[in-house]
Image 1 (cartoon, rainbow over the protein chains, first blue to last red):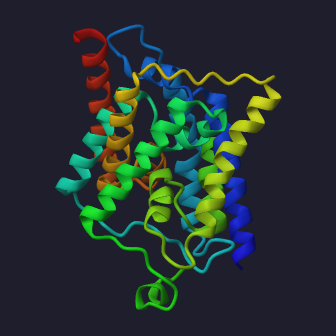
Image 2: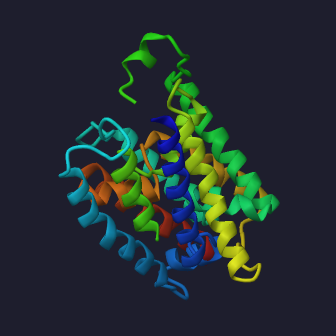
Length: 154
Length: 125
C-alpha cells in the first residue's frame, strides 16, 4: 500500500510544480505585481487561482462523495471548525512574509530547483519558522511503536 | 494543472495538498507518515524542472527582496502558516474547495495583509 501512495504523491507534486512554473506563481516578482493593487497591478495570477478553484471545487465535491480515496483507507481532513486567534494571527503573519518576499510555501519549494541563494535562504528560514512554531506549541516527533503512531489511521 | 494536482491527491491518497501542512509534517515527523510527504515535496521541484527543460532553460524566479527581508519573510511564512494551519494551497485551494469557513477567513486575511504589506513596502517606505 505504501509504494503506490508514495508514487501518487510524487506524481501529484510533479503536476502541481509544473503548474506553478507555467503559471508564473513561482516568480516572486510576478506575485508581488499581483499583490500590488495600488501600483501597476498585474491581475493574471487571479486567473491561476480561479482556474485551479474551477477544478478543485467540483472535483472535491465528487471525490468526497465517493466515500473513500483510491489508495488509502480514508480521507484525512481537518476536523477543526470555528474561528480562533491562531488561525487569524497566523494567517496575518503569513501575509506579511508573503508580501515582503512574494514566496508562499509551494512556489518556494518548487523554486529550490533553480538553486538561487535567495530561494534556498528563504526555504531555510521558512523551515526554521515552522520548527520554532512546533517547539513553542510543544509538538514532538512520534516514533514507531508509540501510542500516537499506533492510533494514526494513516 | 495546479487544480489537477490538488484533486488527484484527494482522489488517490485522501489527503489535502496544502504545502505548509505537508512540510510541517516533516518538521515534526510521525512514523509511517513521512514517505508520501517527502515524495510530494520532491515532485514539486521536479515539475518545475520539467518546465524549465521544456521551455528552454528559462523560468523566471526574480527575488526582489533584500537578504534580511528574505530571512524575516521566510520565518514569518513558516511560523504563520503553521500557526494559521495553512497557506495559499491549503486554505486558498483545498479549504475554499471544501467551502470551509476557517479557510475563507484565513484566505481573506493573508491576501489582505499581503496586499497591505506590498503597499507599505512599495509606496510608503
